[in-house]
Amino acid sequence: MSKKRIVVMGFMGGCPIAGVIWQHIHYIVGLQRLGHDVYYIEDSARYPYNPVTYEENENYTYAAEVLGKLAAQFGFEGRWSYCARFLPDEPTAGLSLTKVRELYRTADAILNVCGAQEFNADLLVSQNILYVESDPGVEQIKVDKGDEKTREYLGRHRALFTFGENVGTELFPVPVHGARWLPTRQPVVTDFWKIDAPSASDAVFTTVANWNTSGRKDIEWRGEKYHWSKSLEFLKFVEAPARCGETFEMATNIGDPATRSRFEQNGWRLVEPDQPSIQWDLYRSYLQNSRGEFTAAKDQYVRLNTGWFSDRTACYLACGRPAITQQTGFTRLYGGDKGLLAFTTMEEIVEHTRAIRADYAAHCRAAYEIAAEYFEATKVLADLLDRAGI
Image (cartoon, rainbow, N blue to C red; front, side, top):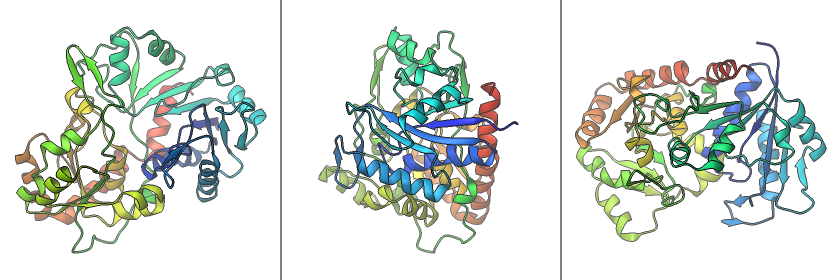
């Protein structure tokens, strides 16, 4: 593969939460390791979020500071820009707007990570924008319902990629109306996560979740409502730790006292998410110090049989930590045995925890092997660029 000039676009400055940050870093570093000339640009008319003050406003100092630190840590110093399109003079941190415009004109590929990038006149000079969808279901339903803005937005991309590996197949119920959706996965730089030390004797199954997402991307389709929040799915399996004889821990922000009490009475340990959510290195340590992950998936991913898989769960696997996660249709492609186990019922959760307890070391080895085979960043990204014709 010849060296290409590639721009990664996303929102890890505007939403500097650790899981979001790692999602983008894996693209940047993976492309670097393939030998490409890689830049990161954040170009948005949306106010950035400051997780320390819990505010969204026009002050982008925190966003710029985060991007500067990440650039120094992960080797893209002098190759990033934050463009504040929400201010009248469109100031930038990092690279100048003049340089950003030049990159848009000359890039061999521009990755619209998570499909979060708004279009502007500067960006639309490029014919090489690749859509990378992390949340399958909503855009396909919008198109099926005749939303022309969504159809037009998607149509401005050179290629459409999605984490929903069943999208466009007979396994996915939503018609795609001729759109060519290409399956992809979250790239993971596995050596960032691999840890040879076994988990501590008192380690427990953990996960990290944002509890308050209900309504943000909920959508109705053919008389049914599909929820974006995973809180409803967790509530279906709230008795899991008690039934399994395990302690499960969740770093989350459940505000309702009655709901918190219900989880705690069933063997859940609830911890504040702020530190691992803000500090990306602490987030990594949190996953590495876990026994494994137990988590639910969002209602949309489950009921639409999307084949989606969590980027966070892929990181647990790269740590060599087994995962028990809700079935979305991904096991037709990987997992389902040692290291990565899927559930649809409480009985399956109990069975899976028993199996991991019986041969934990084998499940840890298998977890890492799945990450290395199916999610290694250089493999995933070389395949993505090849299928996009880059």
